[in-house]
Picture 1 (cartoon, helix red, strand yellow):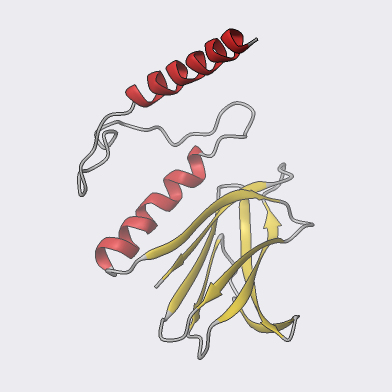
Picture 2: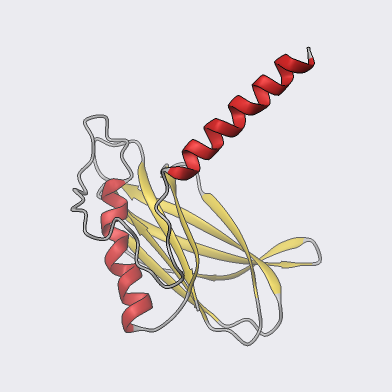
Length: 172
């Protein structure tokens, strides 16, 4: 029994080491090894690929980081349906000015944000966006550290679709 257990452990370690050996070593500050690959941001035949929303968000990430010189503190991708809101929770700190951006893929015609603040274990409405497009944005400047709930709402989905993908970006 002991020899069998040692054999299993040895096999797990070999698999783990093989997986690690496939990673390319990187130094701090070194660019990604995939930076020169050409990606196609098209959907697959089933309409389930994350590539279209990823392609939409990459220029926005670049703009926030390189042009605005701000730091992205959360990046989230998920499915969204017109009859169900999505929620994301984040503690925001005083002394920071936050931007909250939500962008929908080609299937989302209209998306919006409601922001709630946690007060005495209850969620109180704080702010909302009023966008008529697939992009919505809010600016928040907390006066004390509090937990916030970000409600993402697909107000309208393109004809012929039941859902779409969205990306949430929080930056300061």
